[in-house]
Amino acid sequence: FRALVVVYVALCVVWAAEVAGARRRALSIHYAILAALVAKCVEVAMQLAYFSALRERGTVSAALRVGTNLTLALSMALILAVLLLTSLGWSVTRDALTRREVRMLVSTLTVYVAIASVKAFCNDGSAAAGAASGDDADDGTVDDSACNAYLLTECVATRVPRVSRSAR
Image (cartoon, rainbow, N blue to C red; front, side):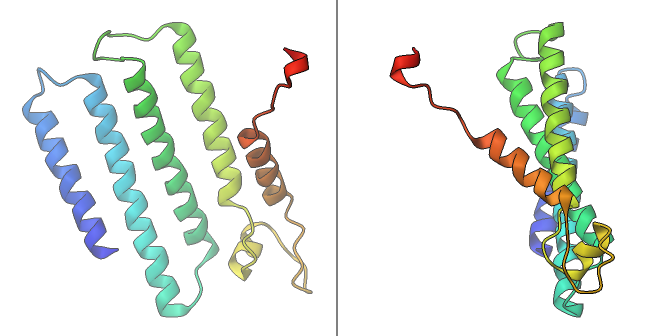
């Protein structure tokens, strides 16, 4: 992961230099791409810290586990937002989004970040995850309603209902 962190940081510096060098010609989408790239750098650095701690101690603190999951969610949300903005032609073919497009973007990202935040606190069965989810049980069992809610939202969000021919 160390090499990956170095590569992401180098690419981030190169992109920032390109955007700064073309300040007058730089579009708003270029700055959005830079924000997504910085978030990805932070995510990869957090993963490096997570796996280094896991390798050295065999366990990871709840704060580091949750922080790693949250940075993953944030970087993915920003990358998806950049893709959505690019598909809408923002700052490339037109300068502004319509109110409807802004509402769609904000609501999509809000739902995504909310679901990802629930996932960050989801119990994976480890002691650190149990502590993060508020598990006080001495017998090692965990009633993790946050995890169940996350799994339910994943099921609902990914399941596409089929329309039968008779209903058409």
